[in-house]
Amino acid sequence: MGRFNGLGSWVFAACSMALAGCGAEDAPGCPEEHVVHGVCAGVPPLADGEAAACSTDARCADAVDVSDGEGLQSAARAAAAGACIRLAPGDYGDVELPGGVSVVGGAADRVAVRSLTLGAGSGALACGVTVGAGGVKVDGAVDARIEAVRVRGSDGVGVHIARGSSVSLVATEVVGSGSHGVVAVELEASDAIRLERTVIEGSTEAGIWMRCLAGCDCAAEPAGDVRIQIGASIVQENRIAGVALEGVAASLDGVRVAGTMPSTTFRYGEFGGGISISSCARAAATRVDVERNASFGVLVDGAKARLGGPGEGEGVNVRENVMGVWIQNVSGAGFLDPANVMVENATIADNRGVGVGVSGTSSGIVICRSRITGTRMEPLPVGLGGVDDVGDGIHWLDASSVTVTEAALHDNARASILIDGSATGRIAGLTLSGADADKGIIQQNFPAEDGRQPTVEDAPAIVKKAEPEFTVAQPPGFAIDL
Image 1 (cartoon, rainbow, N blue to C red):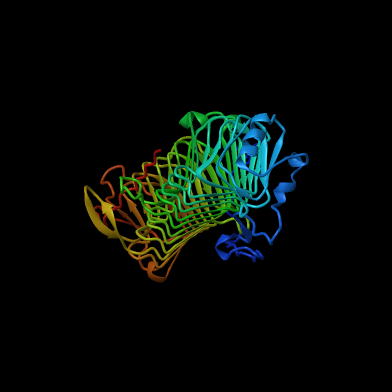
Image 2: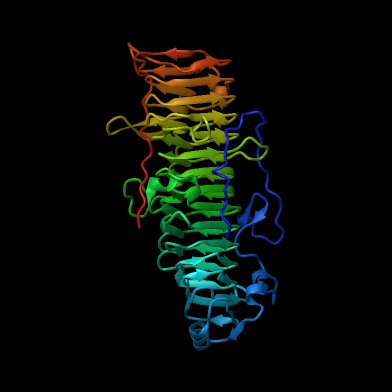
């Protein structure tokens, strides 16, 4: 599988195109809940007797046919790299394939195995099977492909991608995992993972968790970044996090992350966030919908990100989460020159507590051509152990440097833009409407000496206040482990 280079070639794009949304087209024959941006995700529906398209892959033109567990084990022991095993309809046990050996079934509804392991080697294909309690392990396989596979009800992790592996999951479903859905937490600089038209649903823990073993050192050399691509996929009704990215370079396009719930253990930081980008990760998200998560929609923590893009239909939609987008602890040289984090062409609507929050003395934050609307009041942790109702469009904290250009804020419940303490940056071309029209921009706790304000152009003047008018929300916590 080739490695993509989109992140390494990013440049800062001027905000010059119209705000646009994305409509989903019909995907004939696809369950409605699996349609994302006009594409059918998950195992494709088949007519009676029809076989999965991948079962005719050239790698399996000369396959060994087996019809029972004993035959499968015998064929696997005898197989060399490049061989293919074709399974007749039926139930099989554990399948452990040597490196470079492929396995195909006619369709996931007709062929089942308890577990599947792809060993170290190149070019293996797994196609058209259902995998049960043992889940899938990619154990050092490179250029591997898992297609039209349904991983259902695993006792632990649904798909475990071990160190030194590169794999594509295509038109696959990972449902009801007893732990995380898809996990790769030992990634090295040469590894690459792609998820395309895949559904990850109902995991007891995170839906997708990708972590570079070397942490921030992974991002030190762009040529060596771990590459993660997630496209036209659905990550929903998981726990702790929908997608967690640590120290990796990642792109998400045409993805829905929805309905993440808290951990059943209710430990600190396991509150059910949508997308977490942390530990020096770098991520690009276009045509991404982040909805109805029990905690944050998108959290960028000590990482760099582009949320949305300048083109028509490239925006992100962050709706009905507790805190929509929160950016914290982001500093250093500009990732997108000059931006470290850019939120562009975004619709951030009907979230609770905070629409967009910036904290941790972050710098290089740009909110461009975006709408922040309908933030509702929500009891949130504030101060030292307190709780208060918060409902602000933009929460600008900790002397962070933020640029807000061509943004529209409408009907946010408490404050439109709340700046707490000294701050730098720029506000230009701002539209306040509905309930926000008379709220203006408030900068509270303004220092008596050496206080700083963002510059303002074509926007209401900032109202400075020495004393606090509103309580300030604490940043969202997040924690994840095996």
